[in-house]
Length: 128
Image (cartoon, rainbow, N blue to C red; front, side, top):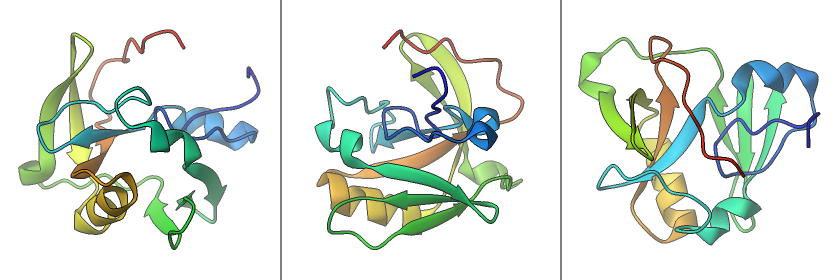
């Protein structure tokens, strides 16, 4: 899928060249700060994504859509965390309670949507 991009790691792909700038910019973590992969949360594979009017539009079966601003980074350090993707520490910013409630309801486990902080070094994502 060289022409498709995955704005949220482990979720659906977007076949839109504009999505290249957002490839794996977000990830989902559980309440213990562990990155959720499809192995741990298989329903992530059913989450579809689209870029529209400055938003990442997130959809899943049985859920209302969720729109997350593409280029907004919260400058409040109280929502900035460090976590591990495999063994690499990465700085992330929590996308808030609405996104957390949406993901938690869909996945049936407490979950948070986290955006990579622009200052974090490139993430060495595992090979698919």
